[in-house]
Image 1 (cartoon, each protein chain N blue to C red):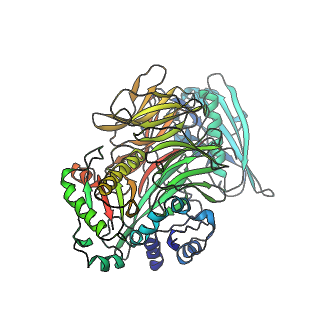
Image 2 (tube, rainbow over the protein chains, first blue to last red; image 1 turned 45 degrees about the horizontal axis):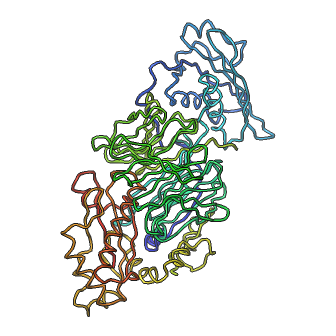
Image 3 (cartoon, rainbow over the protein chains, first blue to last red; image 1 turned 135 degrees about the vertical axis):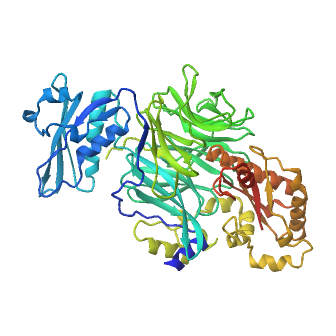
Length: 440
Length: 187
């Protein structure tokens, strides 16, 4: 094994692996700030009608999901007076006395023949005693956690009116120092985990840097920059099969890939003509179209939700600021004016808010600019915050920061009311990319 | 084409994949990471890959053994060259203190046109990663342009940016960040 690892070092080569899913959370989530008036919900442990113990505690998954949103305060099980599983067992008066606004009950069946788990759930509004929503989700043993997240999505959506993002995933890069017989070398990994930090999968390992991971619009493919050839190149990779395709490896920069909302193109940065410029590439034909033409640095393109324009970072005005270019006309407009460093912008799905890295008094924070009113608001307090990525429902931003010199992921709501950290048990973690809602 | 530039991708066995990648020159066309670079800049890459690969870690000091023996005959030997040039924050202007070192490097390149150098541009960790990637390239190109003005051939030079991905020094102090804003010439 030792000589094998040396070989990896010596030739700078890499391998792609799909290791078995890790059942334990690699990223733990600590809420550092929640909403002032979270919704009180009682999530009763679901009844298990099968043999032995239930392989996953689905109601606990739902409870943790809703707690992590910062908008809910799930009741502790030890405070519950009873564990009802069916409506006839529910005494609403008890739950009213306990102060629960909502009550979620359910049971899980196992079909031995089909090897299928089915979770039946019912959500009640406690004050009125009315049923809000009821339903059933099924899966095999491998995807059992998906059922818990699907229930969380339904509950969240019914109560807040906003699509839940508990069934999403986060793509990120980790850096590790590997020691072998006294010599050490760096290893970079591209990993994906459920939004709650569970089920970590390794997608790529390399002795050279990996950066700027990005999802396709359907969540089935990813794009990233890899230095595995000791020069930057952009690859796409299918998640199910692991099949990789080299997209670009021009002389100079090959960077910042961003998949178009319709999935047919990728915006990227190339410096093959001398300067870092924004291009789009048609994935099927590999045809390039140049978008910017300026002697300054143009980088970090990001599609606007309508797919008609891109935003990008440019120092054409002297300092890095965020600009917008309309693809049909090439018309460029500057979007940011506050502060002397605004970069890596992304606009929320409703087109209203620009989330970006913003320097204020020499410190880099994540900030949000209301594109309608122009007001800039700083969302984070830590230093060296970077790589913001917006959740598909537009409510949360995951980003990278440093705590005690170590790279970790953190998240903040776009309105600034909810904050959390996602410390990892291993390595430096950075460059998070929040997946779209993935339809199986 | 170097066999170590080939990348084999697999989903099955890590070991098999690893050995295939390192041990053979095989691989299908779309798995070659250098195809386009080699087409557009073949003189450049063929001139630099052998020495570059010999010291694939940026912090390493070794250079290709063939080059070392070559340079013994040169008045300016590779070992005598100062190959790291520092920059101010958010700047790609060459510092006055680097000029003498760069002139030496230019002399070395002009003595033997078989000599080549990869100029690795780096940034400190402040700012976004892709912006720093562009900044690192600006720094490498500043050095490249200076060497061209001093008479080096374009075919002897290649600018590559690593952005903030390969810091020379860990830590967030001003001293370590100053060490990280640099161009490293790999002979």
